[in-house]
Length: 417
Image 1 (spheres, rainbow, N blue to C red):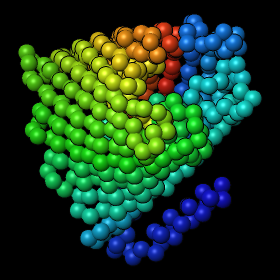
Image 2 (image 1 turned 135 degrees about the vertical axis):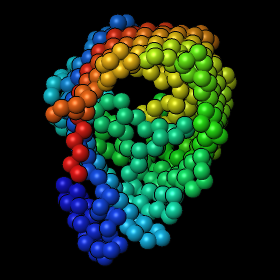
Image 3 (image 1 turned 90 degrees about the horizontal axis):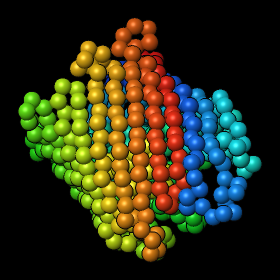
């Protein structure tokens, strides 16, 4: 609490010391938003696949929790002058509404050593920023969203990172991004730790450096290239291309993504020599969107990524990620936007993925998942912007426990100014 008060006082002192003429943009362009998130999470395990007999004997049969989240997000404008400066801040609070020692571990709340979920948890972050023309540098708390690292925001509170990031849009159609991160907080934790690869059980950590470019070659063609490296764990290159084609009154979107990953430095997580190619086609017409995709991994190990992060792939779905060593996955999806039928704000989505040939030693492995989502956002009136989303996921695998998951999200944004 003392740290939060000091940060708040420092922000006030910073604003107060700026001349009024200079601080005009800093104050006038500032925004303060409160987002309320209410999440119910129920997951029932259907088997003991991938577990030893000893572990299965004491394993949970379900995970069920209910929690309330508060996200306060302040974004200042920039001071006037050749180089504008600003300050952003966020405060995150999660409160337990229902849980139990035998039902914890959903990722909504921290879990104590005795297996009980924390009654509440909180964290805060401050980000200093500077702007020259259309180039912005930020240092402090970040929410990175690049092909080689996407912060996870699929539970009560978002995963946050600490570091520095530069984004430049000075050249028309071209966005350049570069950054270095050294610490993060998981989505269900107040503790800041060093970065490590997902699945790693050791004590080593490393900095993550990344750089890349997104280029809109035309209104219908987008190109992307990024490089990222988690120090002494892995390095990764990404190339992507997206294209929109008007066809039969609708739009056919093709999306091709390629990752090449290799171990680096001390290779704390072991040997990595992996290529992953993903392709997806989606046709949208009159509110309907039909999609199909295929993904293949080749080489040693699965696709590496930072612990807890979201993978930039169509296969990163409700439960599974479908990125095991040598795995081949196909996907089919359907979505409908009811605005086309006169009900704006109501959307529906379902998808099915099937992966096989995944490797674990000499054994071939398979997995499949079926997801359904129904969402509605209130369009007008007192509760305009209130979002309601229901999700149902069914997952089965040879190497992990099968589960049925039901999740309900209520979100509401309040613009305080």
